[in-house]
Length: 151
Image 1 (spheres, rainbow, N blue to C red):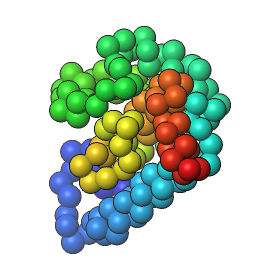
Image 2 (cartoon, one colour):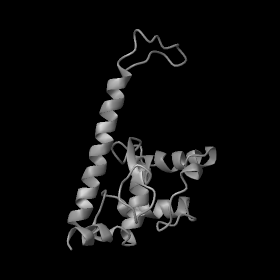
Image 3 (cartoon, one colour):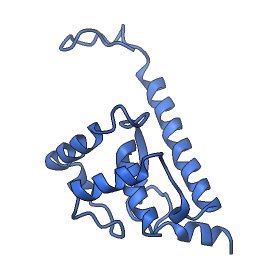
Image 4 (cartoon, rainbow, N blue to C red):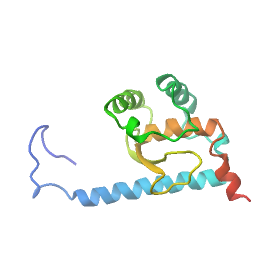
């Protein structure tokens, strides 16, 4: 899809159907969310690898965000503040050529003790999801999903 040269004004009559694009995005994000939850129900998160480079992502995440506590509720305002966006952008760009769809939008639970829900879910980029969920999984914070599904 092309919107024309940078800085050019967008003619709404010539623009592609953005509503359809938004629907396709929403479908893909919900599918990703449902797939991840289904995997957590079938396998303990502490035994799960989300990418081929989980160790590298976790090490980088811990260095870039040493204050992050996977057990705590994510402060979405802080994450999406100007400073937060800059820190995350710098972190994510390291994976531009390593992780497919590294900057694709997805759904992220604000707290590892919650299921996905309207008030418990944050819109995030794929690398934010990977970094946070890898950290949670390594600490066994998602194992309850498997245990709940098997009781």
